Image (cartoon, rainbow, N blue to C red):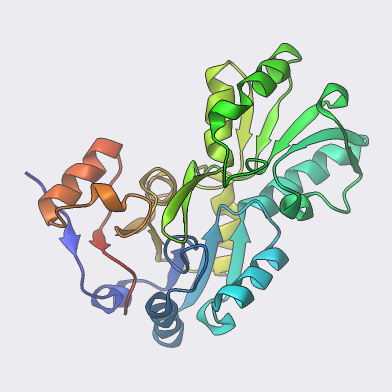
Length: 280
């Protein structure tokens, strides 16, 4: 059985790379608190090797993430730039709205309005909308995708296209998993609805990342999501480091090279190495 290398610290392979493209939720913080050792690892890489780009499927502008980082205790000196799927979705909406003012239904919580605030569009009820922006569930503490079947049936009957500003299906929040916009988008696709995704693992988001990396030739992608972070790295031709103590935590035991190698194989992805959590 083919296994995967297990590292005790990022320093073991850091010398091979001149930039990091690091996932945020599940690696740098857990949805409530910063992971201090991971932040220290990023600082060490910045000091010794090169730029650190945080790549998040958060359906929000960069300014919102910086405010969140301040609350969680993520220090500003552990990264050089932030790229979000929300910013990419906002750019796409802005381009559509250049032609004429849009009428858009926002599927998601009020806290995500920063994705479209200030754009030449109107947030309207579903019956008046010509497009749907999905940033998440209205209440991800209590709802699941099953709560949206009637809404999706209405959307499909009107042939409304959905823009998904967060392809993640689930994330960790304080030790439990909650559904994200990606889970809703998949459900709508199953009904035959049209969805455009912004964020990992879809290639367009990496165009933003390469610009932020400012000429880096050997980036390493780091993340805990096999179907987003690791698959995205594979799609874009980057080496990947899998962080096992994240959304796949229950599936990563026993924590052996053989078991982890088989887990990646089942998901159809590959990674150079794995760690439980990101440390230097």
